[in-house]
Image 1 (cartoon, rainbow over the protein chains, first blue to last red):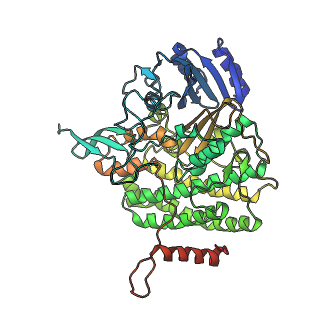
Image 2 (tube, chains in turn green, yellow):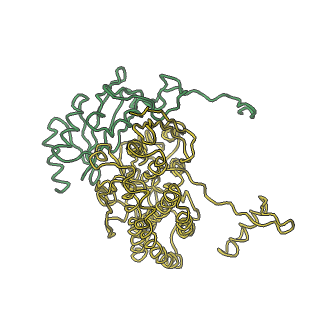
Length: 156
Length: 398
């Protein structure tokens, strides 16, 4: 199958969404939050695109944008808008076990809750990181390190 | 039914040089459960990048890892070049790819040494690391640095290769190919080594696909995925190479895959140097402001698929830089692969995915104190030695 064949198939499989091709092999598709699981299953079963490369979370200030980068012969970026007030998405970890780590990372850094995640421990932040501080949010107020380290010189 | 004992290892522990905590459930010598916890060394690089301009980001991202520093900058500049719609000159792409492959060579040789060391085969470790020096010298010749080559820039590369350098590098690749053939023989035939790694750290193909494993770890479980072939970048569309896979699904398979990838990389370095196009090495003028939009860039790092996602917002600073290094994709699967093995297999099983530790740039040189006969070096002497060495061997004076 050529890249153009994939483009045609993607347009048929996602009739309600705009399929944008930006790079040689990369397609961007905006979908609704509730359609996410079906979209991932469709890509896997119909086109054999099943490798979840990663999930990118972004704070777009009025909402969060999650980009699920799924790859195979071509790369499909599924983009989901998430409400700031209720930052919840269905978990992918039960369909693609490899998604579990990326969802834990998103939970740590942006405070996005993957509903139904089997094991939502901290992934990248340390154990003593204050609860409720999500460093990748644009309005995050980060805890400052102590001005004076024990035995050291005070910060200027 | 023996009693299950909980064995915590880490975050500081004898077999990894970077902090990660492992919790193993053991029954006698057998491991029946494994969990992993990271988060002891998060540096917040993605957040830091939001406050820097694109060129400053390049220097920060170079320092994500000491071994695959070139991987991260290449993935990043590729994404920015897509946003800026830059056409990188061919010679620039070839030189970039040359460093990519040399980096893979040094990383795989380093790993082979570490793997041999983890199973107590220190002779192989010494041999392999000696030959890794050949690659380090070449990289130093090209970029001026042994690690953090700083050769990438947005729109191309920063240093050109002279004809003399090209010939010199070409000449040192053949001895490496010969020695690699020897290591391939040892790594795959030496009975005590093979007995130690065969059937250990098993990861089935189905599970590797489910867990989204990448790189040599995935390929050793039969996952036929290589970004250089599947989503080609740089000079790869014009190079001939084989993607090495294995159906062994264990550490033996991971040794096979990496050893034969070393051979393929040597061949690619030869091809690049023999067909190096003439011309510019970088785009002359690069806009400092990057237009709004997002780009994904995938790269086959020595450890597997490395991904950078960059969103520009029309200013000099990126809105978001997301990095997913290959170890992140593999660590969970590697932890799982330990289940069923023995306690003594933990170090080599975890090391078999080649988790990324930072490597320091130079070894310590212990010189003899002539007056007292003791083996020691002061800082001033070491500095003097370095200056003299460069003057004599590289004709560079400071």
